[in-house]
Structures are given as structure tokens and as C-alpha cells.
Length: 333
Image (cartoon, rainbow, N blue to C red):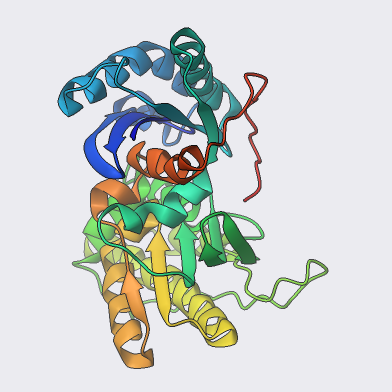
């Protein structure tokens, strides 16, 4: 089965071709240069950039995989969550191709794509715990099988990746912030500043493993305003902030793993590319007997290969969404 995957949930335009779940091509057009001067993603500019890039990216993915649309058996496209204008570009394009070629179409939850992304490179047996951490999402899921996921915790305010971007802007490091802070933190003293770690009590939702990063972000802003760090001091702020984020992510995730009796842990999403998180996650796995799986860097950030994979199991069982399928900015997993 040959599946064409299309992803446009935020600021990356992506297409990929999977042949029997083997990645034959994965093409991503980044918009970093478009949004850099604004220090964050501008939704209207993102949508317009997707319009310009979507057809060339799909054509490039097909060419690299040495297939044509005539060879494709089904299309998987991100239906949400994300920026609705961006989502509509990919979804409308996927619908047009599916209609013209009479192909089955399935809408994929972007979060499911991340949750399954390590499967692109090595099989991870179910069940497993997932820390899904990106610019727009920070959550913990218990994955029992394809299509069977239970949410154990969500962020109550900023996502971890969003906090990275905002702190990078406070420090004048540019966009995207996660990469800039990770690079700078390598030369900084991570114990120089004791920034706060949020400990979240269960609320009315009943979730026991929620996150919060808004207080940490505010603490960094206050510190920078009061101390005006420069040179090595900025690296210390970056390293100390990063350590606080990683502490919160792993402390909460390990508590959830202990609660459900997990033997396998997957860390996925854009922040899964963070070198300190990867280092400490592997060390924690070895200490507590958890098999830790993380996708390679190219599958941490938004890509269409994970969308094609997440849609492939539904296409294989004969699923097909109607052409009334619409984008959903806050689609739940």
C-alpha cells in the first residue's frame, strides 16, 4: 500500500510517501525565515506560505519516492489540531487530489502522528507511555494500541516549546527559540539560578499529571529585568531555565509511568529534539528500568511521514473520511 501524507498544521509544509509503512520520501519546507523577524509564528503569513509551498512539496515527495499520483492508494492528511488557516491548506489540497483520483482519504490527528513517530524507525510494542512535548502541546498519554490512547495529563497554560520560544525572545536569541536555547545552554551553568518548578495538583478534570510553564517563564522575565545578564550570564540563564523545564517534564512523566506500570516510554514532538531532555530521559530509563524510545531529529519536528504512518493503519482496514471532513484547531486525541 502506497500512502501519501500531507502535513500543514503550523508553519512547516510537508509531504511524504510511505510504501507498506516504509518511508520512501519525506519533504519539509520550513518557514523559519518568514517568521524570524517577528519572534514567533504569524498565522496569516503561515497560511500564505503554505499556499505557495504545498504543490511543489507534494511533487518533490512523489518524485523522490519514484511514484506518481496514479500509484498512490490512499491519502492521510492532518485535520487538527493546529492553526486553522494552515490546516485548511493541506486539507483542501488532500481533498482535491482524493476527489480527482477517487482515492480514500483519512484525516489524522497531529498528536497521533507524534505519538506514533518512533514506529517509523523501529517497532515499539504496545502498551507504552508517551510524553508528547512540542511548541503547542505538552501532554502524557497511555497508548494501548493503534487508535487507543488515554490522556493522563496536559499543560494548563504554556506548552514547553512555547515557553522555550518566549524565553528565547526575552533573552534576544531569536526564533525558533528551542534550538537557540539548547545550543547556548551547553556552555552555561545549569545550577547557577534556581528557577521554580511547578507541582500541579489534580483539578476538576481528574487528571493527575498536568504541567504548567507560565510561572517559570515569568520568573525568567523577572530575573532578566532585575539582573540584565550579558555574556556568560545569558548562557547560565538559558541552561538554568532548560534544566527547570526538563525537571518538570521528567518528574511528571516518571510519576505517570510508575502509576500505570509502564515498561516503555516514548518521548516525541519538537522538544524531543532537545539534547538535555534526551540525555536525561535515557539516564532515567536506565535507572528505573524503562525502555526509552525517541524519534531521530527529522521525525521530532512536524513532518508528513508520521501523518502517513498514523493514517496507514486506518486505510489498511478500509477507513475513509467523507469530503465534508473539516479542519479543527483544537481537535482532541
